Length: 215
Image 1 (cartoon, rainbow, N blue to C red):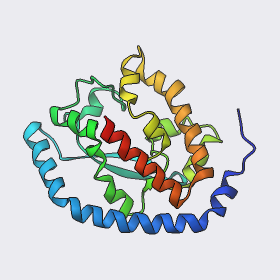
Image 2 (cartoon, rainbow, N blue to C red):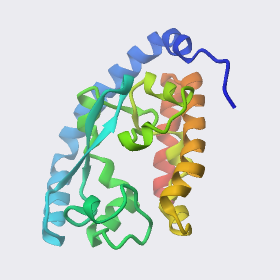
Image 3 (cartoon, rainbow, N blue to C red):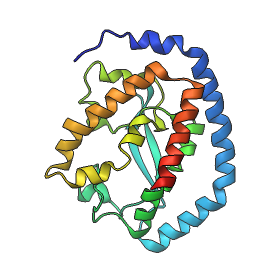
């Protein structure tokens, strides 16, 4: 069902909030990177000792206004994993390494995205950035999620924190993602455009931390 909402106007009216959100992103990502450098080094050593390949996983994602960028994550799969399967994974994917399982469960694999946030490619809160393949499937309304910077977390990420388990139960994980999971995520992302603000973002960050601790 299409919406009559003018998302461009909604986002434009939130210019003041977006300014403070960006200020918050720069400040916290900078101190986060500095504070976590030693922890990053420990994770890097663990990854290298566990399997062959690079420490970081870099993948092209679609960001604000449809501009592509490379997202940073700690590598959680075997070397050249994308050449050995789909661009999405399930809970028991054989490509996931031992250290990778821990990093995924604790969401520590997402920490290098602090660099993406500092560089202005991402925000702490916002629609999770997708790969070009799936963005090409967006409807005109769904493309409105590209009006703002993508984020490390959002309402959809919290709700579908066990997404891999959902896909694991499907006979066709990619089809399930495209037809069932992705539309629900995008609907939540469009709602975020209307709710976006400093305090709402802080609320989502807190909810994310609580959900990770509960795991």
